[in-house]
Length: 255
Image 1 (tube, rainbow, N blue to C red):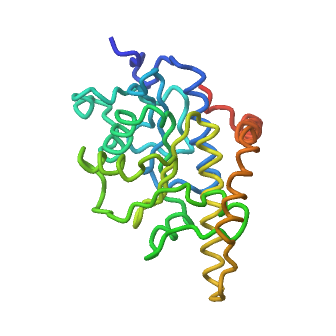
Image 2 (image 1 turned 120 degrees about the vertical axis):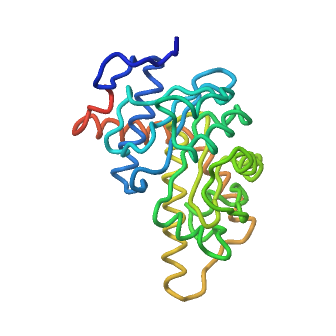
């Protein structure tokens, strides 16, 4: 029997991995509030097995703002029959997240979205993030860029290519596409995505002025990037505070 099973015509599901489900559901709701989502596309996932191959992910074509903990699919990246399930995930989600969880156990949480500023940056001939403030310097030499977009990701080979493009990095600017962030926890992935989109916004707005950028020296940018490591625990506080705000106005995501 599947670890996630239907228990009624309403489509409600038994909740296992309750903490992980609630955290991931919260991330969807908060992402919708921040306008990072796009229609009923984009996907978040979270590994729940030690090897990272079993993971939770949003169901096909469900709006981020409605997703509850009990709606999340439990998938196995090595299950060749996944796309034959009655509740099969979106093909592009399976292509990207399935391969990442199969190949990169360290990437336990994977957040992939097409937010406005990150996507605008990804559309530039040079989608890199120059270190022009603290947030942009956070990613100095710490982000991968995929320049080989080949259309909607819907086959295993494309998933494997994206795994290679990410390499040893945690964040990927997907040229002509969007952003992808990986981390050991939902809180860390959410915080990284938050600052990555903020950094993209700063860069896009700075470019829009048409004036020269004041780019930090490599030494200053590296020192600033390393300084962020002292604030690593702030990611958990940031996500906790966001969840508390969400609980006050819309606690239904926990169901």
